[in-house]
Length: 257
Ligand code: BTN
Image (cartoon, rainbow, N blue to C red; front, top):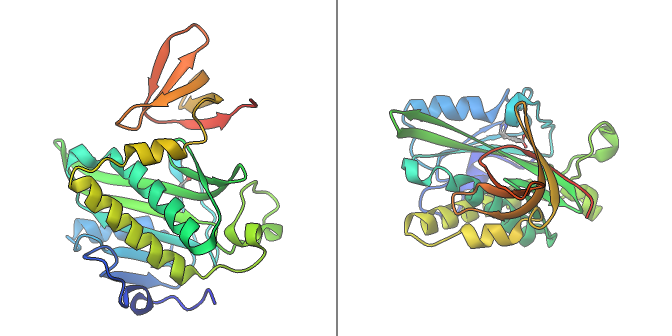
């Protein structure tokens, strides 16, 4: 069921204007990010998607490795937004992931700031956004999405993540989920471009708010209550000395209530 991926099956009657209208599928690839960035530098049409059946050198945020065996979803989407929209891509892609997982599986993922999708507190999806920016002009943005779809958790006891099949006790069709994801990405991107707010939808899904958290970014560590998020996506953290820290990026650990 999960091996029926091809460029043609993903694109067929997708119903989008541009996201997923051009798909390049590789049964096996180092990382979809690398190919997507090469394609973007060569001027690939907006909405081009690179999909891998498996990745051999999948990568996550902060140069971490990302596990991407067969049966999982690994893809990168090329967009050309203006600089103003760049911070919104985190909200857009994480919401698209949540909506598409809900629609295909009925599961209800939550979001951990800024863009990890969780099910029952365990990570099920990672998102990596990379862009080429020159003199404040965005040359391209690539949204990389990895969803633990049919990851057999028993085969990877070292990871504390979960997978959709692990939660459901059955396989999930990658093709249906990818197609839904591309539709949701385009819907939210078009909404964003036409000035509709997507911030509230994203904020309301964040499991982080109201929780005591630790945020690590490089050598800096913050601790406090995650009070709110700003419209640009930054986390507003109430520190123990009463001050409010505005955090643009970082890794959040949720503390106990
Ligand atoms: C993270 O949570 O650290 C982000 C993980 C992002 C993984 C995806 S899988 C598709 C794309 N290709 C990669 O090599 N990484 C991203």
